[in-house]
Length: 248
Image 1 (tube, rainbow, N blue to C red):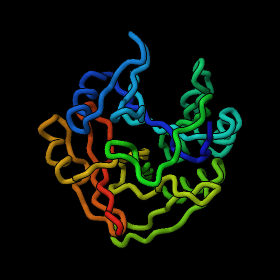
Image 2: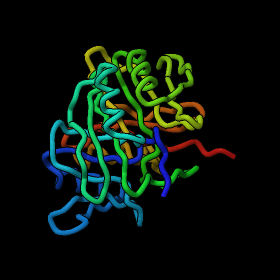
Image 3: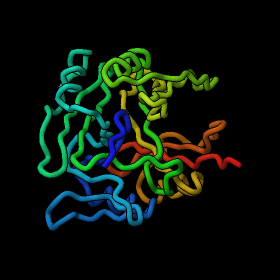
Image 4: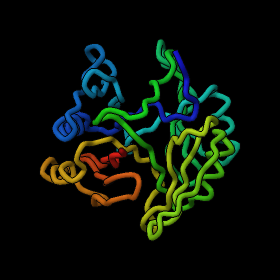
């Protein structure tokens, strides 16, 4: 059992129409969503791997769970640093303990300490698995100060030209764990958007609308990263997808 504090270790789809979301993602990405037991928590399967879950609730979004050493301590620290409470620390019997806050720019983030540790890091994740997590916020500097002070990140600046400055969050070991960028339009809400690895980003993009979703960001080429896009599923939750550049 191992922990990777600072890693976004789990992702959940939150909506009031799980069947519609399930059908969309199973057809688009080949996932299978199955209850662990009749009437119990629904788990997203990517092949043989458990990669996330599906839960009922609003607003419709993908919930990102950040691994921490002590949920209660980091929850208090987040509130002291300007976050607003969304869910107080609670035990999930036999699984772990978690809480949720809205960061000072309004983005929802959950913190987690699992009883069985975190999913292991992989140099290259399998297609269909989560590969990145990105915060789009109207105030990147305020968000950066919050995540560095509360969760111990450092960061690396990456000038992306017309897109602007991209902040790569790094954990205590220097491993990249997520990114922060400015929202594209004034008035857009702050939100964390997970990214799923795919084999062909353009093919995925072409199938989004026929399955009932929309493209929030058309596929574009990001140097040294790959081809990336963002979709909004039929219930309104945003998810990114990335076809990583193949390195020799």
